[in-house]
Length: 65
Length: 503
Image (cartoon, rainbow over all chains, first blue to last red; front, side, top):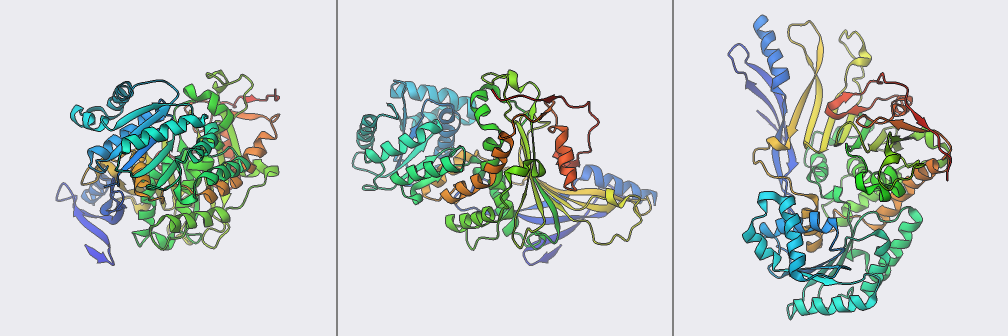
């Protein structure tokens, strides 16, 4: 992971099979923590790629290669 | 935790009290956020004992909260609930209320929060009588008043109501509520924009092609036909909720999170919105009515009230010059959704050989406010094993997948707590109300001044009248519907048109 001034842009190595291992982008995102009146806390979550669509196609492609 | 206070709810026998206010206060109580010396006094015309009132509220609270409403906590909470019968237009009843509240407060005193959960026609008499009976005086603690929407039905009536309210209360005591601002995902617009550093640099005319704000409801008007027919979608949704969301998307970063700093920035946005010209209303808006609306309860056969509208607004400032903001809302739509879509521009030069470059989807940020609260960012990726073919992929964050699995509280829970704590950040100031009416009045008047023109109809369960597609196409854009799919011009039968002469 690369830490960039508070924002983390992550390249996570993932994959259910060895053949399917690949890199997918994620963005670490500050969002308001729900139900935190009046302090308005911030927590960090990730924007992630949908695995069900994108990952399977990437894994498939790599196998064929 | 809040300070000791008495919450006086006017309109205590209504649905808002039973279904929203009491459950929200109960939730705050269960979370230990209310001071033990917090009292709730309901007032309405119906004669009722304290116990009968508590019993009624308990039934609704259990319906609303389900298992979260356990008997032990409810018994503790209900002990602080009281009822006072009274006519809101009768000053003597306010003196009686004052005596009852003083009796309940005893020597403790404390602040008082008056919640006007009543018909808009009673706002004026209520604040005048609060003033006339001395209930607005801050002699033994703070006094605040929450006013529900709708706040006026046009600019003139909003100004008149503001004047009446200001005769009784200082602006700092007035909390005009728009429950949209209490939604976590609307507040998160501020966090998303100003607690992250990578979005704000592209949040402007250099990178954004257009912004679409959609509030779709699947439901029809149901039992609200009488009210709705006098309001229509433009008064019911646009002047308040949608303008507030627009302000949160478009505002400049406030210097600090404080009520006036935030509201000053919203006012700057409203001041910069180009006021539409009623004469050319069809150039920047389209309206429609769902088929069968005129058969709804309390809706006249000849009604030409719009149940759907789409409006283009332009913001004449440095950040947003040339970026159209499309706002649309309707009843009986294809799905229930509230979402903000930031559509970014296409890359200035595309080096790839794409068959139809116009079909390539540019980056798009979709913020779903409700339901299925989420943030999605779409971007282009290469399709594996398919030459240099591109596909659109999405990065997404779903609140329901959040690590801590926090339950998103109801908007009223947050807003009531803020009002008790004296934080007006998420309430609307008088100038915001008047400016948003100034923008919406020409749209409302433009359409109501041409009642003999055909009112486009749409089939319930669709995305509005087919004319809405033509409207946005004339502005060189396409609607982006729920799930981020662009709406192609649907091949539907020619829409029915209704032409009705005014009665």
